Image 1 (tube, rainbow, N blue to C red):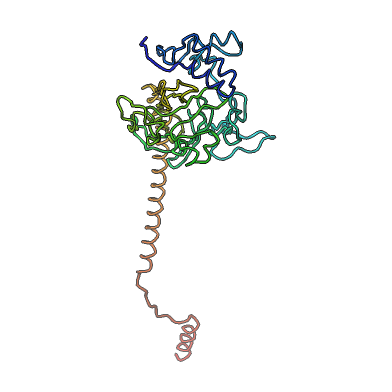
Image 2 (image 1 turned 135 degrees about the vertical axis):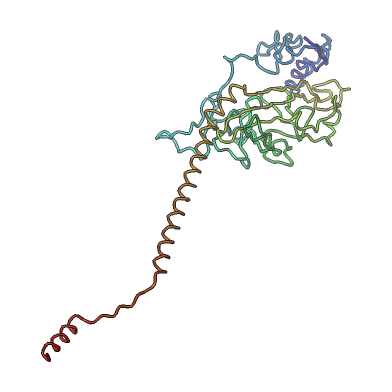
Length: 373
């Protein structure tokens, strides 16, 4: 119910749509002047997130029915409208008419919203669907891996990297966050030219969306603060370098590859161009609209079940296996020691000399003695 003063996204969106058509640009500008359309307006959080009917767009809708009067940053939180991965690798054998899946490909997405390749960007690289949906990764996940994750809110795949680990109620978790390369402008990372990234730290929506919307980390965290397009904004409190508070992080249990904890922190911004998407007296800059923190945490019951059904059998098998190996080695060592002692004992016995005469010789001697007698 709290009211906030924010940018009139109907104004910005309409002017951005017609900026390349001088006739329509002049027409929309005239309507704005006639209606006295404000550049700033007051809205509550629900209206900013879930939308509202915009007065300017309502007028334009009467002129062209394809123009929606509704402005929303995010779709309604309706489970029936959630777009789920249409196809993923499950770890089983591939069908006869399909190639064998690559290694460690379990849970990797192969299709989203009915598309094997996106149609939002201008290059095949930008339209690739890579990685999982972020809720799980392959088992026996290691800290040196650099996985991809498809983010439907950004209409693209992003690369993640390790940012440490933590002990969560006795369960070791690996931390992942957005790889630095994903945030670089196209000069410092040419691959990002496919996504029209011109300023470090700002991920634009596809041009087909029709809105100059850019997503960043809250308080422009990990952005290029030396850019004049960034340093015009003063945040309260101004602690954009606090990574723990403003970074998006995923905590993965490495043995199963399952997501255990997540902090999705994203800030939605619009780009203001004086005389086009903003009045001429407005400074050119990225202007924050709202930032959202979505948090996922396992329940105590889930943690307990995980320890009983996953950790206990796994580490129990390791202990039993280790004990069996140790016992086998110990028995082998005892057997070797006993054999060695037996051989040494036999080798240490004294040798005895025996005086004897061949049986034939003794018989002849006895025969001779008999004849003499």
